[in-house]
Image 1 (cartoon, rainbow, N blue to C red):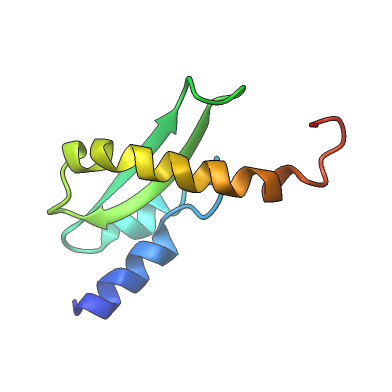
Image 2 (tube, rainbow, N blue to C red; image 1 turned 90 degrees about the horizontal axis):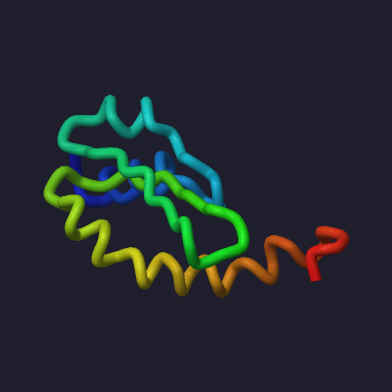
Length: 89
């Protein structure tokens, strides 16, 4: 698998929105890829999660270290995700 194939597979198989768990089966069927379900339980009014498909070189510790960056991305996206939800202001 080339690097560009790997990146495309990561993007296609990972979640793209909060509580989007991605494509576990597609991720795990590719050689040398691991699926992680990253959850954020205590930073928002409701628990959130996202599925990540990453190369096997990424350990669980790497994913945990990525969590602050993931939180920043989610925090930046939340206003856009809920702007048309009534009663969520």
